[in-house]
Image (cartoon, rainbow, N blue to C red; front, side, top):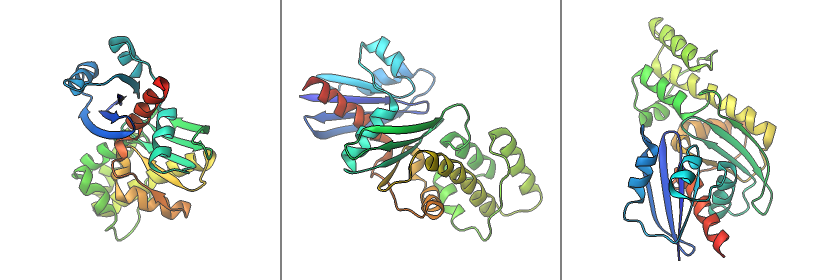
Amino acid sequence: MRFAGIDIGSRTIKLVLLNDKRMVLNKRVDSGVDPMGRAKGILDGVAYDRIMATGYGRHLFELSFDSPVVTEIKAYAIGAAAIFPGVRTILDIGGQDSKAIAVNGEGRVTKFEMNDRCAAGTGKFLEIMANTLGYNLDEFGLDALRAAKDIRISNMCTVFAESEVTSLLAKGEDRQDIALGLHRSVVRRVAGMLKRVSVEEPIVFAGGVARNVSIRRLLEEILEKTIMVPENPQIVGAYGAALLARKKLS
């Protein structure tokens, strides 16, 4: 049988399809201004016996497609535990929220904290800062690692941080140094969240921001821990939802 998991995030929609336990398909599209239209598009031509939704838009999907739903916290815990058996801590940084999740040895959530009321420490914050400095996102993280010095960014509010960056550029500061300072500001914020929840290893870093090599390296530095990143960190929630769809039918 075929089981689908769909993660409808604020920025992207991810789809995973399992043939029994084996992943046979994963797809990703931007959420756009019509996420349900995009969800319908990503499912076009995909045959499945059961689907489960998670993410920011899961309740809209539930109404539109008569689908069961699961919280992002549980979906990420299940997905991460399947990819990295024995995982104890999960960090997810997505487009507009970040989550720290502690799980036990069986992959069950024991504690979590979520930042979903402010763009600080999220992919959206990094995207805006990259644009302000004239980077694309792939360049942004890599160039931060080339910085000669660390400039401390005092503001985490996106509007004020953007103004601070503009001021630093006007003073002649190197954009690589500013980039490093911005990355460190994000890492300090999410590291604080992790420390309140769990820093027990193994630690898995998921979500779109996990592709940013600078964030991962700085996290390892500040936590003095090894951070594991899945090959495709953006599909962890969708994968967990698909596994739960399979479990519900078994």
